[in-house]
Image (cartoon, rainbow, N blue to C red; front, side, top):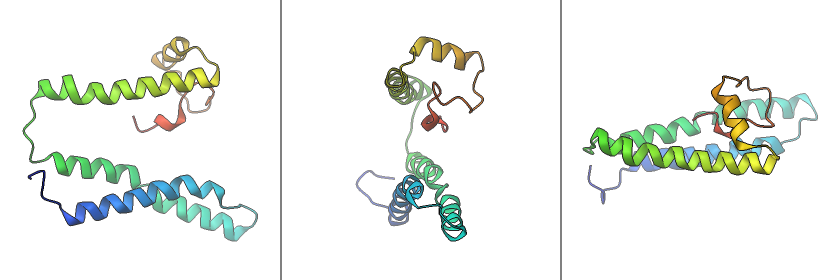
Amino acid sequence: MTKDKRILYLDILKVIAVAGVIFNHMYWFIPASNDFYITVRFLLFSIVKPAVPIFIMVTGALMLGRKSSYKEIFTKRIPRVVIAFLIASIIYCLYKGNNPISVFLRIFEGEVDGKNYDYIPYWGWYI
């Protein structure tokens, strides 16, 4: 695939995924005051969950035609994601008033039960 050629169905999938991510964050604002609203929230929550995996699949589809060496993947692509995640995690830890080193040690030791959101960044579940 060339860089200048647009693929319509991938663009449509990206638009759907963007809308899904937006709705995923907005569904918390729907009141849960009665059964109707609870049902709407649940349905909306269920429908938009594939948004992030759609982004990942579109990225993979766009990378299919590229020739990448393992060296490029391990020296350029993976470090960019890991560094961004680490910086965001450190900022989150400092914001919550935690020591980032102790947080990473707890995670490294396997204390990731999903119940203590004081130190585990819940927004990093997909990493």
